[in-house]
Image 1 (tube, rainbow, N blue to C red):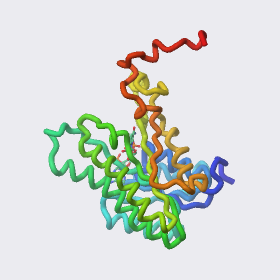
Image 2: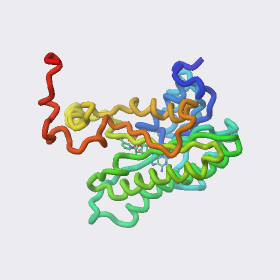
Image 3: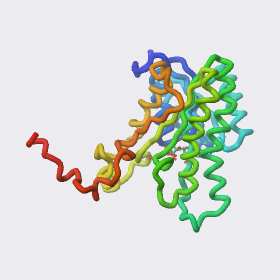
Image 4: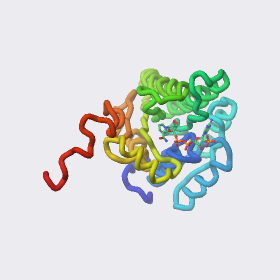
Length: 272
Ligand code: NAP
């Protein structure tokens, strides 16, 4: 009996989450396990993967390690072979693995920096999706969830390569949705805003939160519901789309602290 009754259609599904050794991926992997999915936990090495596998198993869920660098097709293909041997299929793929650092100004950047970020973030999505989509097609369908960023449409300073990958991931999501739709494979993306994955100091959280329309920085738990919804039967007619989980960040023209009417000038609750 799953601990989390929210998406019973996901119970027993085989879910591969890349970059699940930390942050958003770890939270998504744990939530899929809580609804009774069989989760393959991918990350770069055993040291990152095993603690997540162990915590899922300790809380009554089902998880297996899936070590691979998503930018290396040989490692990816061995990982997929091992998942198929263990579980027979992949029903849901969450392409979460991504890197941001090192952050470099455009003038400080070099080819190796550019290529590594493109390889992990964008090519990694392709390399994992390609064999997995073939498996899904043979099984009658599946769901792929890609991981974008606000940087896809609004730039970060010193993130040229990262933002380029995220714009690419949104275009890739639409293009894959068209090619894979006839095989009953839905492809969508999540767009996190500013999510605290490291336990930021309170002052940093407060400062960042002030510029978010909902007034707070995001938590990794904010990311999990949309992932499960997209993977579920409830999202059965949704493909090629994007869910923004950013507290309203991309909806705003100016940050709250410099807007014409800052939230501090809004009508007070007691006057309503
Ligand atoms: P994170 O805390 O760094 O976790 C990502 C995990 O993926 C790490 O364990 C990382 O290992 C691993 N990884 C890195 N390269 C990999 C590779 N080649 N193959 C397999 N695993 C790899 O990141 P996060 O903040 O949770 O972000 C997850 C996703 O959300 C990323 O795609 C990111 O771009 C996106 N996102 C995050 C935010 C945010 O505010 N956190 C905002 C927008 C978008 P290492 O620690 O060794 O790198």
